[in-house]
Image (tube, rainbow, N blue to C red; front, side, top):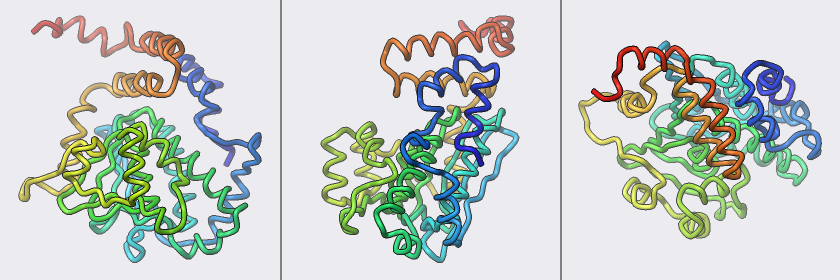
Length: 305
């Protein structure tokens, strides 16, 4: 698979505003061959450590559910699962009708980071750095998807699993769940981009506390510091996934092009200097002005009702 092939296709296509934004973001990826990163090489290495899977279910409603599935390892990422995740992100990048994404773990827990079998086998610094770049690329692309994403945290989100939650726009936590950046206990720091994203979510002081103290963040603390949006309370009101879908549907109601445009302008505001963000917002605005949803709304004169 060619590195970031979907984004390269977009650059050749007619989506001028979004394509130019992606180009400014190195086609959505952090690393390429310029940085000594060879994606096919690390994919081959990672595939040598199988186990588990990453499953993707897309719905006609425009919502998708991505499930980390390796219950016998508390949904830890094997090498092949890292490759699976990159492939699922590529699928989502090409999903024209996508509006929302829920990331969850199988069997009542989120993700316990990396499978130690793969970690030990890739313990030399060169392979570790390649894996780091691979996962940073993948999680950056996940965060930049033109749809609104939510991490549904049940059970424990540890290490790389905690980092994965930060690659979503929002985090919803079930009662009794925990997010914990345990890297310090492993003699490490975050390597999948979790620290950079965490600072943007909770601020540098709280990030220092969570990383330096390997703090167990329960739902109450997560709400207090802004790491989580809501605790999914209430038995008898559906499964946690159903409640997460209901929560997300509030923000994904409407035509896919409009929801995608919302995500794009917020993404540009988050990642670009103000002048560039303003130009991108203008360009994205031009893709929906006079579009079907805009014309229908004008015809119904619904704005002031």
